[in-house]
Amino acid sequence: MIDKSLKSLQEAGDALREQAGKFGDSAKEKSYELIEEWVSAFPRLESYGLTIRSFSLGVALSPSLEVEFVGRHQDFPPEFIQQILDENKGNPVISSIFNTVKTTYRLHRKIKLEFRDPLIVKIKVRISPEIKVFIGDPLII
Image (cartoon, rainbow, N blue to C red):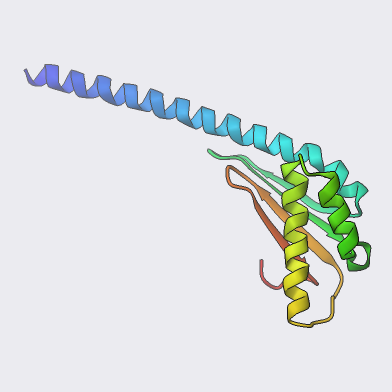
């Protein structure tokens, strides 16, 4: 009786491990698809005046990509940012990046501080992407 119970528990454990492995593989595959989608937008970002300063890939259960772009504030007046947004309405990657830049600029103007170069856009792509925009060299990372 105890042997049957132990065998049943072992089989259940094996089934759970196999299922967890499938979920892990699925999440990893989804992460790589998401990373590929973002990477394909990077040449377009460079055409708008953002230059890649650093690029890293983290491989784990959930892979991630971290990229830092730099630019100059004078190259991104509000009209140009709006033009970029209008041109990329169907592109969620470009739209999310430049909406974040636009919002950061709007909030920065509210506190009436001078814009210090560089403009830094840090992107962390994982299952839930993260975009940070810095005005000047960041002390907060």
